[in-house]
Length: 320
Image 1: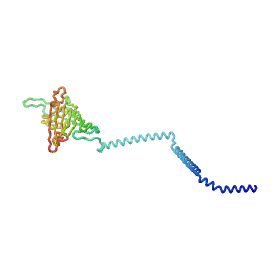
Image 2 (image 1 turned 60 degrees about the vertical axis):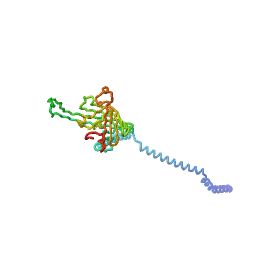
Image 3 (image 1 turned 180 degrees about the vertical axis):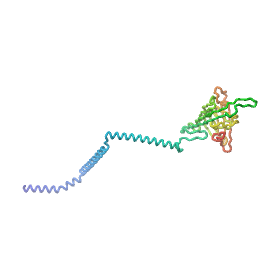
Image 4 (image 1 turned 30 degrees about the vertical axis):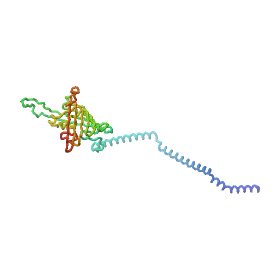
């Protein structure tokens, strides 16, 4: 190598050596190069995360890779477990039901008894209510130990028909409540006396409608009791459940008919009821047999200066 060539090589080496820090400074300080380096580092990180995810997926696939037989076994076990769970639930329900039957708390019941002939509340809505009531009793009558004949004051002898039977004596099914307005009330009932089922008037399906205009005026339409003796004051059809009315009451009292009623309180201890009806008694009387005069009138006034009440339905007897 000639002297000139050696000198040129040395000069080039010195120049490159001195220039390297400048190149490094350019590379470090250039924003574009910095961005490229950041992108490369981010890509490397994402590739590492993707590889790690692939490894986790492969591991899960290996763990969930069941054979067909294993899958069938798993399904069979699931069905058996479900059946056992259903049986367990049924046993639990039965046990709970038995417990409720033996001692159910009051809050588990639905509906409440309405005193004063209201019955049980079975419907309660903003548009109206329905109460249902039912009463009946069984009577056993045995007269076999009585004399078989009776002699009246004229010496005449009569043979007696001595009874020995059992009867569901009376049955009353009642629906009552209000509709659209609490002042607009209804009463619908079925009443029967089974001891006299052969009589045409002993099975009655009837009722009435009433509207309370004011405390002093309550207007009604339908079948009602003509106001008269105490037993006709307000218990209809909620009489004491046995035949407890006295002979005098039976003699003096009016009966039941279809008509228009007006009732109310003139003051807290003074009330009245008046009725204009078709007949003194319309039980068993067809409309074609009425006289068409609409002239039966009955009324009563009750003054109660002490307690101001006489039972939930102003009735007569120990029940009230």
